[in-house]
Length: 109
Image (cartoon, one colour):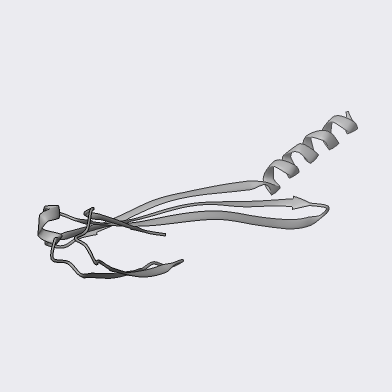
């Protein structure tokens, strides 16, 4: 009986010490001519090993900027600059065009 209680306690303790949190967020916004989306995915793992608390994480994000009107309207575009800021990341990009753009969507990560 004592062995069973010890085994159950150990299983409960190991289960309680290991925790995984998945984060999946999407934020979007728009103006008259542009729409943007920021997508974040992350995993946090808490646990224990050899009597020590462990932590690991993995994350990724993507920023998508899309022109809402036709590609022809961007034909005179020579330079595109944009920036974004979030709690855990920020980014900016400058793209110069020697020829008319071939897409209305721009990605940053």
